[in-house]
Image (cartoon, rainbow, N blue to C red; front, top):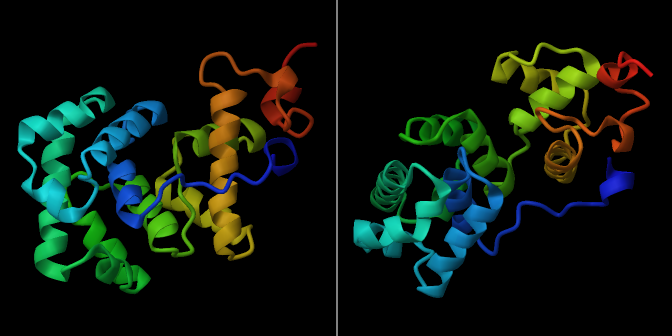
Length: 209
């Protein structure tokens, strides 16, 4: 995948707070819509804890509306920002906690599940945890025959057990899965003939010639 796509240098963001916001907004949304929403917040110089906390809900709704579930996401984002401000003073202090404490705290926040939590831990806190998303499950299922409904933690443990524990590798490998899933290993009509993994993919090999 790396030979095909090149080093991805992903997650695209200028600050850790932008990563946090992006991870929350991208739930059930396209990344393009998230980029536009973040762009609107940047234009208003409002991509920071205090600005999100103090922004009128209607204004925040208008900025993030196209990411879907915008009322729920706005409430979750505001509550998470308030909690960070009140309990840790800054996002950087929260991100500096050890892995177990950071995971426990993030998962306790409404609107943050396993994938969002690990995206924040990997890309913002630079913790060595591999992010599992729908692309990862689909590709691992098709290439290696793993149950696509496998539990999040089981697939994460499987991948981490078979990869060197390396922060740069974890970030790039996850990004490679995203690129492959978006461009070739599509949900409905996979483009197997063009896929860089087609020679090792069990799903493709089983297809009639």
